Length: 629
Image 1 (cartoon, one colour):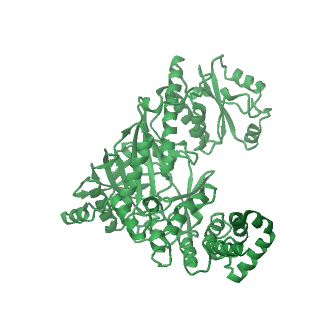
Image 2: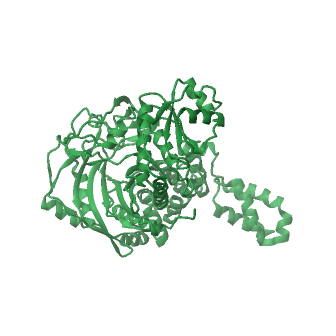
Image 3: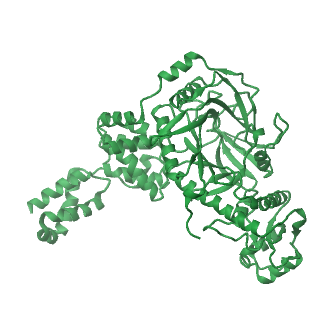
């Protein structure tokens, strides 16, 4: 099929920005938000879905609890206390976090409430030890200007951040409590129609407004975008955890294509006439596949798994139907069962394959009493998980005729989205009983308005004038996660702001593009590297070598990187000896090309002395030697 015309499908996108605040402490205790690599405590919890104050169980919580996962928590006393473990009631709300929330609300021209009520939002994926997240509505309404268009603000909330997921394997999910309870502001914007590029501009503009306050955290993971995407005739899909602006546009484009693809799949299903599926269409087929040559089936039988088949009448061709590349109902069902720890499913549209042969298919079809246009799925696992997964598959197939469903999905590193859980219901939220109502005084409102910072344009001009760098570099360094570090490095009079900004914005980014891991390069290592440069202990060329060592995991500190790469500064005498040899070996080239030979000789010299001598000095000495000749 031809590519999707995105402007003709009724695309609507609403952004939710989650921004950590730089308050140096958590929202309801005095712990500092320090990221640890070693943990002093470990404990486990088993979470279950409970009825809300209204006597209802939230559908998202019910889905998560059906996975029957054990949650393992790692804690460090430097960054968490009994509050994070849910062994002690929350302390008073952090006053500074409240001030920043009021400031951001004022900057967005939102209507701030005179009373703030803390609510509990049910979260049962394990990211909150208590099974809920504390959140409070601070303001509603307001706007932000993007390309001379008004984009409305729906709500501004102050809430706790969740625990950090370390890994998710088998029936266990592992979290660290470093991040749990860190204050963050959630800003929900009104949906806009159409253009993913415009949505990216909205996120960029809002991110800049938050950064000019100088009261928000910077760095990887401190700002996250959730995106609500829908098309004509479909439910609203919430996509969690888009961390990079570059990802945002691609994620929206993919999700628009996926949703429109699901709409086309629903039209195909509805054209086939009525179909029904229930528990009577589920059969145990372990004995039927005893002699199957599929490695996956053999392994399932060895592991004493039950192998089940699900019969779907009149569904032949539907699971494999692909209106756009990679968009299939079969793929959606495969994603769904993986959340129960089941590797995947086979469907009849993709068989024979995976070692399942025609003979096996005919046996299954006969046992299920299938007619020509009927389809089936094969799934293996252990009870009760297998039962939960099959119920989810049946519901998904039943709902497939309705087009794209309202659900929660997660952004993937490949700029696609993957099923996470059903959308939460109204019963998800109920009042927090441990914290009294929080008042907002007229004095606090006045202070918030008086603290509204300069605009982004004024801030960029200020950076240009202060550091004598051009507009483009000023924008790049301010938009990067390294701005505070840049200012700290540039307090040293010997530092060149132009060079520092270039390294932080270009060198590190280029290394990332070449698959080096920027998360391994900590701010203190970058700061130490520039200190060595300013003290003439390393050359400019050494910086990239040091960063490569750390970002590849070969070194954990600057000193180890220097040792590994044998970086030392050559004296001028040592450098002259090396250059004399290079000149001697290339006399013919110098005689033939004269001064033009400088460029090629520079290349040879820098290859040999990179990181041990400055390029300027090498150039100067080579130039003198060529002139003498």
